[in-house]
Length: 476
Image (cartoon, rainbow, N blue to C red; front, side, top):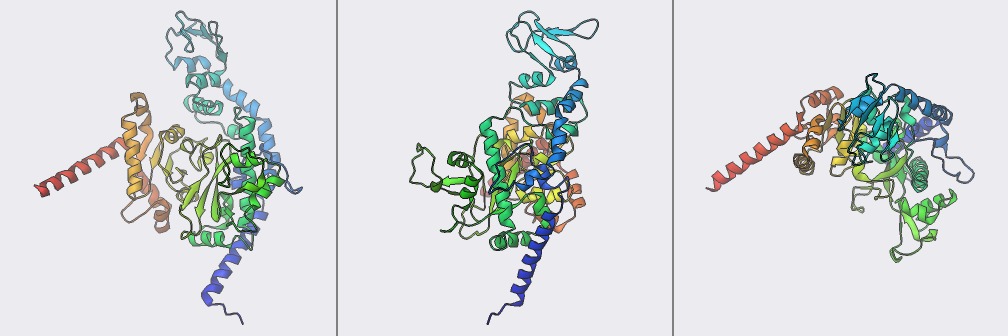
């Protein structure tokens, strides 16, 4: 005779209902704002067991139509920008327009040019000294010493000389990615499908679904952000993910390079990796959060531990790879990379998800210390508001960023005038905690009270000096 307590029965009902809602939601057509529509559809991965990867097929016709318009849209954007105006904004030595205003010349910025040999028309530039030449976006890219990618140059130019980046360029693919990079993106996209399937698995995904219920996440939210589940490793399934990749046609080396798996420790680093049997899942028994770049490609994952007693780290991220450089990435930025509106930077994945669901543009530093590179990524926005965790680590992160900005070159320091810092009330841990107890309008009101980073840092220094003075007086 099996006895089920009322509480247990209630929890089972919740899980079954949650699973049912998941299935119903996933069978509906994804809306434009749905997570699957964020993923790049030009990335193709081999079929597994004769099945096409469903998410990549969804809406593919619409996106392919958009991509076919890509070059046309780009040319239309270029036609609205006068390259002579762009070049003039850089204050090049010897810059001079012709009387007809259809040509200009200057000393070339790309080599030691003593006399003007750099000629510019409204659409193209050419140096007859070093041979440099190209369109407006290539000029902006090269003037950044190639620190900007071609897509980033498009974005910067549009933000400076047009009102915003046209929405038609949303699916513009990064042209500089190598075959190796695209292959790793394909591995990560396949993993996205695998983890999503496991979350919906009636027998294996229960722990992850229970966690989502406790956090109050709706099935629609979980689907929108592509959440998945990496099952725990057991003797009979520790290679499930690896075998899935094998069926998809990926080599052991490609799988290992993606960072999604580990190899057995007895293998030397110099070993040639050609054996699937030595690999196993890196993210076991974790809720999986896919990370996308500005091209809407899946480049990595964050994993939240579901068994805190047995798992040391609550969160782990994909390791560094040729496509995943954590210091240059903000979780959720793929949603707002074409906007100039205010954006909030917080620490945790679920902080960003809660804010986005509340209608507030937000991104996350993925639980790690915020970097200058991440700030540069959002420098095109009107305001960037930092809202870190209301604990010692979060406040230390803010202080370190301010210290780095203080000691950065004067030009970079001035460029950070868009940066503001907001303080959460006492007793509130993070943005997720705030929204659980308050309304989105309450958060927006608090956001309006944010201080400029210089004002915030000066206030912190004054408080520190005051505390030190009081301590010295007591000791005296």
